[in-house]
Image 1: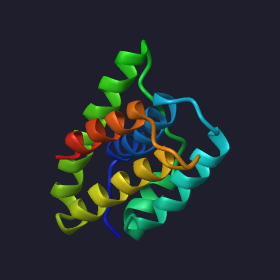
Image 2: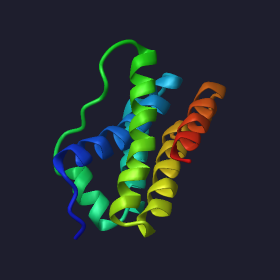
Image 3: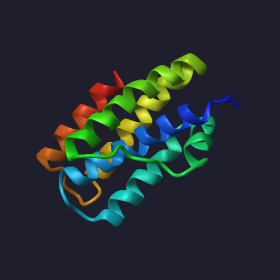
Image 4: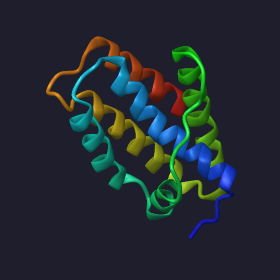
Length: 128
């Protein structure tokens, strides 16, 4: 198992859960359906990353909506660098899993709003 520091783990949790929150709040919908869709897609992560993400509750950035978005997008970029430093082969898995989580959240109610699609695009861009 790859060893991540607590700070690295917190960054990963902020990135993963924060990305789903950004998409979910981009267009109000069924929070239950959206959260279940995102959590189901977490199975796409490697075992090591799932363990790190499940190790503690996530913490989202504080402040305005813009502050939260900027913090989560920064955490996504930083997460890619963290994973690359520990286990480069997991970078592609992480990118694909987070992208699928966001797409699953966006489409959980059967439709993808323009605002959700735009947020998914911003998340994918942050993932590199």
